[in-house]
Length: 145
Image (tube, rainbow, N blue to C red):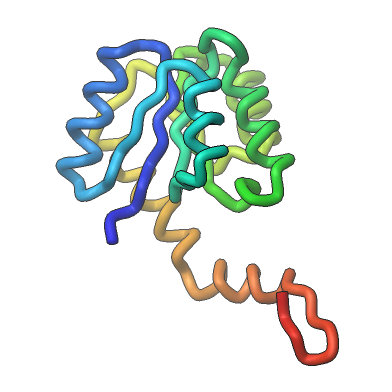
């Protein structure tokens, strides 16, 4: 099954470029130009394998959306890549400190983005990541959650 990627960015041209290239790389891509639309999709039960977030968006910024994801048990383990025109060291460090797995500055190379997506997903699919998940499981009288 193809990995599903949610992309949040308020620029339609960026969404189209990302969609065309990531779908050509074999991913299923769903785009949102407002964070509220992504939250609606999540509430409806559609959960992606990865988020690509812009920082400067309407309604709320990418930092707040990342905070929401990382504070919600059901979405905490989903990897995040920030894709932003904010290129200051402070912005990059803040994004990573909030739980993002990578940060790519605009303008960006679509090939580099696809490679970073592949690398992040590979880390989450690794045996070590699966073992880490099992290590966090709760066990009570032989039942593991």
